[in-house]
Length: 229
Image (cartoon, rainbow, N blue to C red; front, top):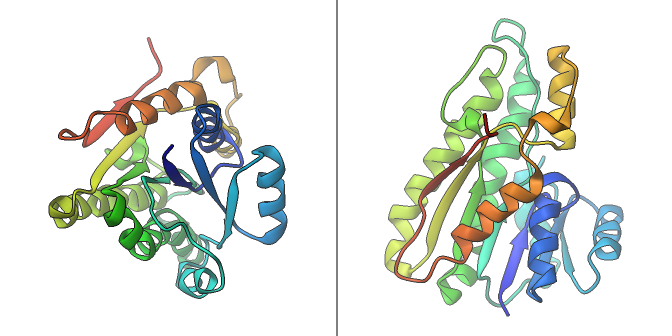
């Protein structure tokens, strides 16, 4: 049985990954933004443990964790949570930039820093669910893409720094996926949302597990998955 810490398990890709790992009997530690959300996750995933910490305030994660029990070893840390707010560069305010950079980049960096000791003990795996926006930036995606390009850099630097500790690092770049976040994006774009056109969260979950289950001695560094056609 392996131990996984997962962000974003409440919906979409994170929920699909958590369900798959729970089905095979692994131990789950699910990050929740507050105590109420933690109770909801505990009810949805019986047997899972929860950690409370708000990714919107990465500077407070260390304090929050100092008041909670943490796993002694971590086989994988799965960064799946994220936020998105579209807008042209000429219109985006510093508040919008800061919100996306905090949740999508600074929080994963801080969470990784805080849990590296347990990851090193297990020679574990850090996996970042990035985005196609982490490879290219389109109009109105500037702030989000900047956060995801930064996340790619974080993963690459971490891989070099932790290779001698046996820690593997993977970035997964999903294309548009049928999630609540994608619904929000379509609303902001003024487009009709049709979930059938996009990747299912379960397909991305299979991609994530493929990277996690690769035999030791090899690692998948970067993996893109796109809608077919």
